[in-house]
Length: 254
Image 1 (cartoon, one colour):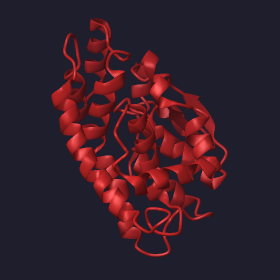
Image 2 (cartoon, helix red, strand yellow):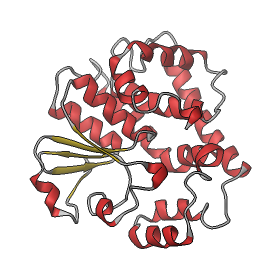
Image 3 (cartoon, helix red, strand yellow):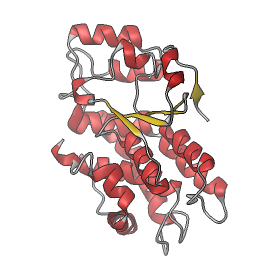
Image 4 (cartoon, one colour):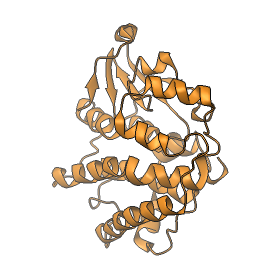
């Protein structure tokens, strides 16, 4: 469980649930969906990622990685979206978002989504859509480098700093990783409505934002009919509308 003590101690005074999030962030989407499924009231602190509002002394004082989302529950700071949704389901257990059995299997899906985020999801999204829109000036890059201490994130963003860009090799590498994951998801969904069976769980919440964002970047989902059927089933859920579509109706138009 990713609980941290932030540099900004003032957030310890916040009462209730507060969420620092970005509209187009797939990681933020899964937390908003979980809050909706739970029927929990929360205070929104929206950061416009396209304006780089997360790259500031103030926000790095709350989340040392400068990433969204950050959840603060009665003054306790939680980071890493898959850890956050697991925390919410444990702390606010009704309605449950766990399977009747094989909880370990569900957690493996959460861990997989977290594991591929920087190596595959971010490179694909940046290379196909976002890097030109999020290009930093030399001054902005200097500020980011001074604030960011996470080596993995620093290395990733250095790959598209200045005149550098992620390109076809990065897309090909990302697609190889993503393809293996979608093969696994396609097989898991054979004969099932949801990833873990008949019950909608955190596994579905963890993966549907990945699908939504990647499809919006042109990722070819046609080879995966079970995944497409599963994705379409989310359209009937209020949490999908509240957690994703309300904030980002169409990622292809971002």
